[in-house]
Length: 151
Image (cartoon, rainbow, N blue to C red):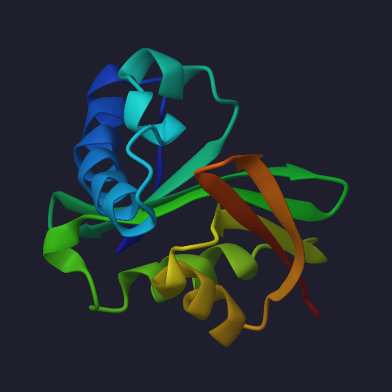
């Protein structure tokens, strides 16, 4: 079941962290960049993101989450994470389908580590197109994607 998460609630923010941190640790290993900013998040930093959060729950257990901001008919995905225990079970796909179905959205944008081939493949498979590679430093490049929707 997918439902909105009140990220201002400390317990809810800690639940999100309980999946975000292990998921981003895996990404950090994949892209060989241990200093990923999402690994530094706390419940307090999640409170002030201004992002809308939805979670994928199996019973009461949060297994995946997506967060985004909406502005001018554009949905900017900030995080799409699945706890490693639930990788390859279609949860990321369900979360992406859910947010793409929001009314009045004409375009989705997202970035991911260029070396994260699983995420890059996921977005390309879902109709996103690469629009830019952004050099952060000598160890990290991120790829920006966009997708126009026909809602």
